[in-house]
Image (cartoon, rainbow, N blue to C red; front, top):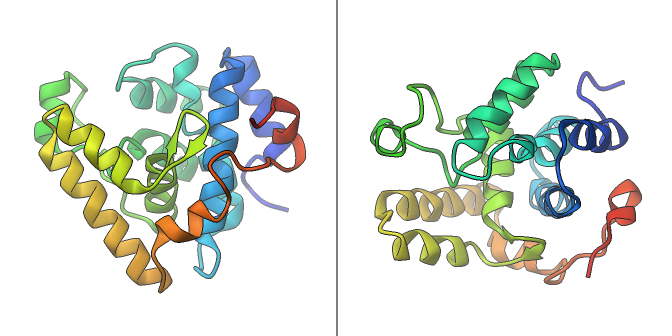
Length: 193
């Protein structure tokens, strides 16, 4: 038995928090990518699943970059394990450094993913746009267009690090799911295409 909430519990937590169907579908897509890119690593799959499904729980209340901070607070309030809270807090791009946090008006804190699971979920989120699987370069390009070169560089570096660790380009691995992967289990009830 995992110490992390399973898929059914995560979906219920998202619904109770007030997440829209669109956020839940996005989270299910991130889960599909996270599970796929985590294959062959020693990542804790229970934590990957819970972290991927709950990473955007803060979008129930906020749709700015602050949703990570809001989500971590929601997760703390409902008593989720610290490892899940950290994934939620650190999932923006490839993390936010002190300068990013200051520029964005986010409270001081640690927003850089450091554990394997934090990195894999953050990167899976970088490879999903709405509910579509995209190469990581999609996110890199969006960040550069917004003037966030440091963030774009961190996403590219994270992609290189994780691809090297996995022995394959994670874009290729994720894109094998198709651009809108058929979602299994409970997530399937939230649709796909």
